[in-house]
Length: 108
Length: 147
Image 1: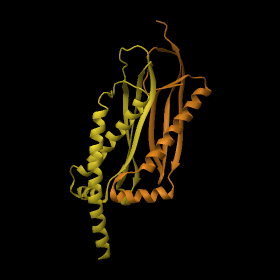
Image 2: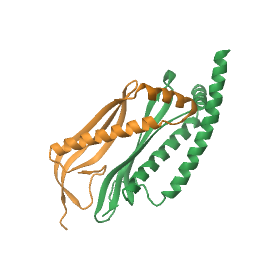
Image 3: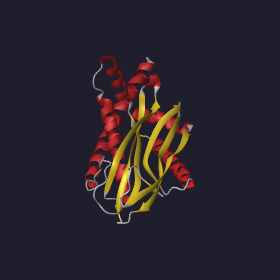
């Protein structure tokens, strides 16, 4: 499965468009991390716990999108976009979407 | 009286630790930026005239928080208006850090270029009275890897 945020892939030709696929997860952080975060809000600096949490959640959103693309028979997802939005106090939604396509090797 | 004492201690801690952390962070950013100079980021969508390269989605993210002292400065700025330099350095640091992490991931994959770089900003934690506590910066792009 080729994942890219560009509209074309070098050396490949798009033979079929299968429409938009997407994946999302909503995550909340646990209380321990919140306490650490409020401490960091005094001293400043990186919140490693949150960085990791968001990174993992984003990977999961991308994975879900990949699964959906596979299910409809695509072999690549192009023009991927990643977005974040806070749904409620303490929870964030991570969303990934892109265009599922079938790619074939270009015969030069 | 006690309130004032707590406030002043927090300000002092924020100023001291915040300054120290920021200086150290800037030093590490500059050093790593030198290391990764050979791996250019390009925000263009158009592919270069190169033959077969593998694609991989790479990303880097960072959540970073402002200290108590700077938050107070920013609050004052809210009254008088003008440039909020306290937050400018925060965002600058976060963005450069995110791009560096993306480059690190790309380097492990053996990439020569990163194309179509996008930057995304969101505020994760809102403190009291909706003041910005910490921001997340995400940088992502397509790494081109020679076959």
